[in-house]
Image (cartoon, rainbow, N blue to C red; front, side):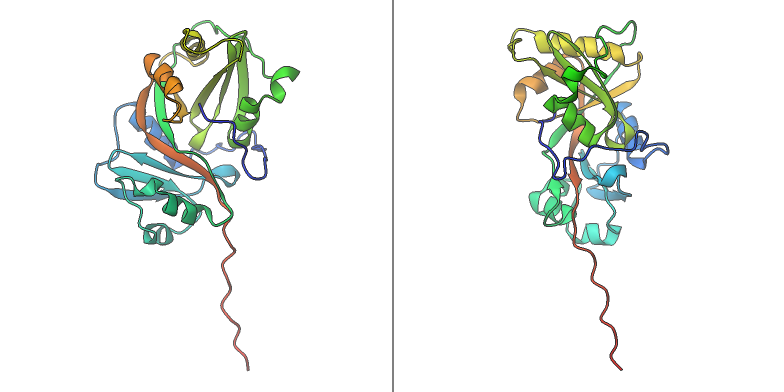
Length: 243
């Protein structure tokens, strides 16, 4: 579950279908969900930037994948590797630029949907959810955001990083954590995804209660990730010759 931290311009993803053509990073997530990971070689793979002005750095075991508009040579010149340096603060700041927004480091988790009859009503078009911080945050970073929930809390289901199906949950304040409400809500949320199809979640490792909930509901760790919205200085043009 990501925190509800707004991006600098607070701008939602406006293209309802930004991934009409699959982004190559999606293949890495899909293969990892199936247990097929990149080689543990310490290398860094550089891919094109994500739609909507977003970029990211994803760390698998012994291999990193960076999606950015920067040339690969520029990325590699900053010294990332597949053993953790691709998520180092100095590298992320160089990637984002001095004024760019850098999200928190999240654990990347996945589980198969359970399908069947949906166990949570669709609240996407209700006025009460439109201004909820969880929903606003999802719409800033993801596309086709659907909102579900009940008296226990809210669930967002959207096209997330690289077009993967991404889920997040948040309990209402009236339902105190530690009583199984989170696990029950997350279990019901998995019914919104067709049986066997992968769904992903980005959970802050520091949010141990949330992380335990996802693990208890069958989610498996794949790696870790940081999403950014760069604001890099424009490249300076070469000086003009004076005649």
